[in-house]
Length: 53
Image (cartoon, rainbow, N blue to C red; front, top):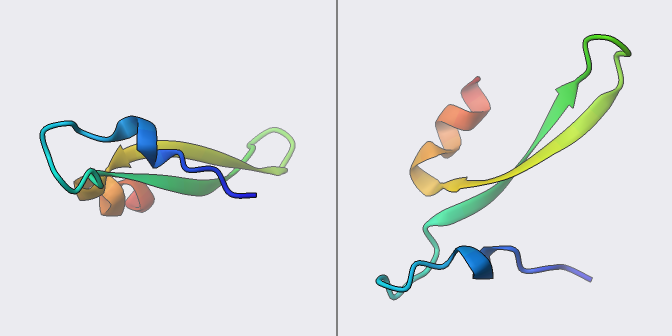
């Protein structure tokens, strides 16, 4: 069952409440070579910058 993580990040001053996005990035460990997933809540404006790192 899906969990709504965005509800807690809603800005009370805006009517849309969708100023944040949950992003999931796959990161490779330099020591073991195994992949893990990194989840974060970021602003919509910063999504492209987050994935270009």
